[in-house]
Amino acid sequence: MVAEKDRSWGMVIDTDKCNGCSGCVTACQVENNIPLNDQNKFERGRVMSWIRIERYWEGEFPNVKARFIPIMCQHCENAPCEPVCPVYATYHNNEGLNVQVYNRCVGTRYCANGCPYIVRMFNYWEPTWPEEIRNHLNPDVTIRSRGIMEKCSMCMQRIKRGTRKSGDQLQDGEIKTACQEACTTGAITFGDLNDPESEVSILAKSDRKYSLMPQLNTNPNVVYLATVDPYKDKNFGEKAKTNEH
Image 1: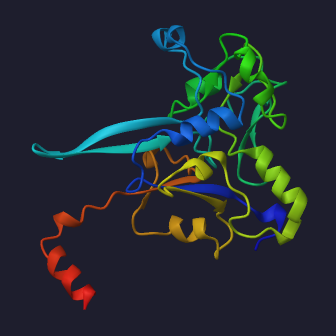
Image 2 (image 1 turned 180 degrees about the vertical axis):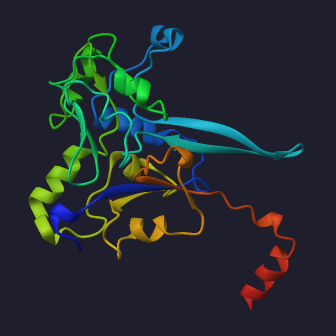
């Protein structure tokens, strides 16, 4: 348990568990009032989504496997998107998050140009929803207007709700992001990286850990765990038999 001012929210994603179902993408869209994408947006390359699933292939034919990596805002400590914003619409708060202030944003898109992960979205149109689902929008999340940037907030509204309720007594795992809740394989873990006893902090120190584009020195708060292929170990079968006994 860590004092509120000393927290650093982060996420660990186990790519060995991710099956590319896109449940996290859908949950994020619903939780954060992201407009529905239609064919026109796909054709123009203007899809609105705070999470995208990257697919790649591993191995050689005929032993080829599809692997998946969910990519969202990495909430970098050395975020290249922050210093280029002329109106301070994106900045780092005292809890380790890269924050977007919508009513400051003037839509220069400099932050999107500076982001190496391509995770900042620009609103080309006013957001719209079908009549039958308008009453299902989340009242805790601001609806962004045309001409401004948006991206993953690590469900800031849930963080605020949880810390307001529990304060310094907040327990590990008490706050869950929408993508974490929706993940059917438990690939996503969220929590306080500064709490040495938290699950996310322990996983972030795993031998399997890696970050995206480490050569850029962005120091992201999203950590990935590499895939594991037990069949590459020639002694795997013997080890399994030994463990059974």
